[in-house]
Length: 149
Image (cartoon, rainbow, N blue to C red; front, top):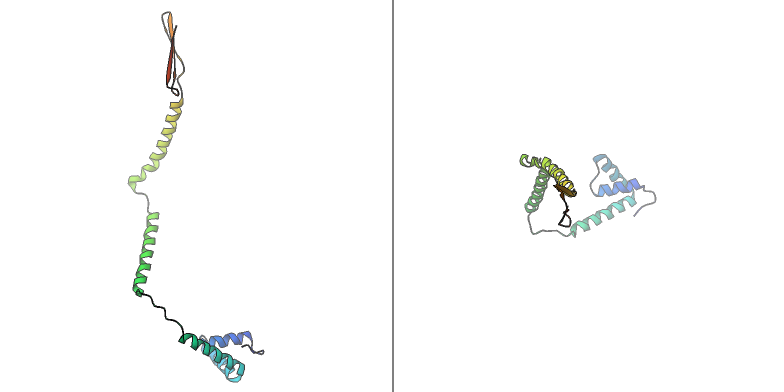
């Protein structure tokens, strides 16, 4: 119920007064306004009645567990999160520190081994007296061929 001559500020102050949220100087000014203005008094009365009805019929929420039970669960989750964060920030144990250097070294050695193993030997020529032989080995096909002249 807004009267044409009441400002929005006055309406808000009457609402705050009805909720008990004003300090002493503002409370006295609003009480004076309510005493002098019938529209302000009607608004205050309506707000007070609504508040009373709401408080009287507000359902009470009950839970089967105690307050301490819920707080202990919250504390347990906070502790678990802090422990997980501490584990994530913990330095690697010195025993596993050598893995930082060994893993790249193994990688380099594996690459060198693959490159060396992929090189195929060329034909071998042996000359014994007047006879000569030539051998060809194919690792990919698993075949060795020898020619003797």
